[in-house]
Amino acid sequence: MSTNSRRQQRKYRSLTSQKVNQISPSGIRRFFDLLASMEGVISLGVGEPDFATPWHIREAAIYSLEKGYTMYTSNLGMLELRQELSRYLRENYNLMYDPDRELLITVGVSEALDLAMRAILNPGDEVIMPDPCYVSYSPCVVLAGGRPIMVPTNQESNFEISAADIEARVTNKTKAILIGYPANPTGAVMTRDKLAQIAEVARRHHLLVISDEIYAKLVYGVEHTCFATLPEIKEDTILLGGFSKAYAMTGWRIGYAATNREVIASMTKIHQYTMLCPPIMGQVAAIEALKSGEASTAEMIEEYNRRRLVIVKGLNDIGLSCFEPRGAFYAFPSIKATGMTSEEFVERLLIEEKVAVVPGTAFGQCGEGYVRCCYATSLAEIEEVLSRMKQFVDKHQMV
Image 1: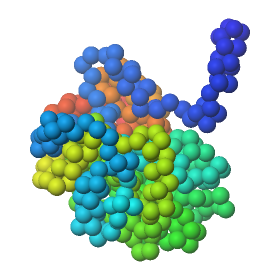
Image 2: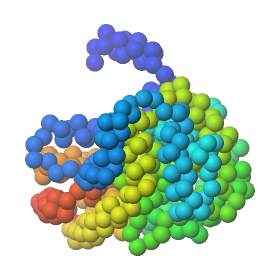
Image 3: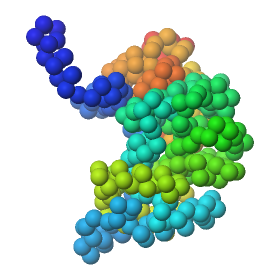
C-alpha cells in the first residue's frame, strides 16, 4: 500500500466511530458475496426457511393493502398484535404481559436485541454470553458501549453454557447475561434445570437476562423452556422473539420484546427515534400467524426433523463428527479431522465442490474447527451436498 493510500485510509478511519471500527464485518456475508458470483452452488449457508410464508398469512397482508393499510402504527406496534401476542404468551407459557406497557413490536428480533442493549447498558458495562453464538450478539453489546464477556462452550458439553462458568466471570461491571436457546449456530437446547441454575446466578448477582428465543418452536423430541417462566426471574428477563423462523416470515421483519415496563419504556424511546414502527402489513401478517399459524408451523417442523436426521447421520458417516442438534435448523459438524481451519475448509469446499456452508469462526473463536450447515433446504439438496462433501473428504484423504 502506498504512503498516500495509507494516509487516505487513516484520514477516513478517523472520521468514523471507534466502536464501529472495533467490530468486524459479518463473517457470514463475506462468503455469500463469494458464492453470488458462482453458478451451480448449493447453499446451506443462509439461516432462512425454504418454505414460503403460508398462504393465509400472505393473504391477510394482501387484504390489508387492499383496504389501504399503508400508514404508521403506534410506536409500540398495533394494539391488536400486542393483544394477540399477550394471549399467545399467556396460553403457551402462563406468562402475563400487559400489552400496553410490557410488549414492544420491533423490526425483527435483531432490532429488539439492539434496543435492549442500548436501553440497559452504560459505558463499560459487561454482558456475559456463550461462544460460539449468533453473529449479532457481541457487536450489539459493543455498539451500545458495553463489553462482551465470552464463555467458551464445546461439543463435549453439547455447546451448553453453564451457570458455574457464568458466575466465574461476574464482576462489579456485569450488567446482564445474554443467551439464545435453541441456539444458532449449534442447534443446542438447554434443559429447564440448567437454565434454572443460570437464573439463580442472575438473581444472586442482580443481573438482567436477555433471552433470545426466536427458535422457541423449532425443537425436536425435547421441550423448550421459556426463560421468563423460571422462578422469580420474569421481571429481570428481557424475552426476545419473533415470526421469522417458525412461520417462514424472515422478510417481513417482525419481532418483539417482552419485559418489565421500565425497560420497555426505555427501549421504546430509542425505537421511536429510529425505526418508529415495523411495516403495518407485516404486523397484520403476524396477527394472522398468531391466530391461525400453528398447523402450518407443525408441518414445517416435521419436515425439518426429517432433514435433521438425514444430515446429522450423513455428516457422521463421512467422518465429520456432529453432535445431535435438538433445536433450530442447523448442524454444526467438526471439521478438525481434516486438518483445515474453518475458513480454509469452507473456501475449498465452495470452490472445489460448489457447496456453501459457514465457517464456525463467524460465530466466535470457539467456532474454530466447525462449520454451520443450515438444513432448511430440500432433502434432495441435502443428499447432494452430503455426496459432494464425501467426495471432498475422500479426495483429500482427510479422515
